[in-house]
Length: 275
Image (cartoon, rainbow, N blue to C red; front, side, top):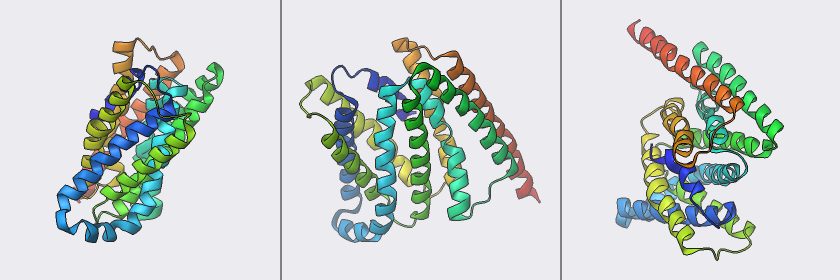
């Protein structure tokens, strides 16, 4: 729910470019998770860092690319297009978790994947027609990269994966600084980005990372769909950024796929446990 305000906060930026926002937001996120990691482990932080190094080197770049593509997508298309496309994350996660972690994907999940892809195709068609195809494609890349990141979190759940989040944030920060024309922007924009990264993203990603130790990959991304569903409505309600008909239709198809997956997937799970 905290992350559902991402789109709304981004629309409050007055002058900073998407690259400058990436630089400052990622900087705030890096400070937050590094501070939490040091406070959590105190004198043992070097030991814990060595233990998580290999897993962090895999997961960190995935999150870094996802963060970069996410903000670029928001700058090139509507919040609704970006968020509805990101709602495909649980389905990519289910596929990757099946291939990499050996988690079995149920028939209900496969049906939901196909249905969701149809909804995303509607939004991509809308982007092609309205000239924002690149923004929609970047949102799709974000979904794939974040799904891969969640699977990497699950794979490294035996160690503290906060260093992976910190590495991803530092990568995004470095790329944002290199790609921007400079980081000298209005103080208001800087403060918004720092608070966004430190408080909202820092708290949400930290909780998300620790939750991945206990919750299966597909389920944890399914819970994160709260962000995808509510984010466009904050912008619609407050900023009057109205989604197009194709976006609403595609979002409805994706929401139907998610709802069906929740209902029938849980029913199948309960049936298996009762056998």
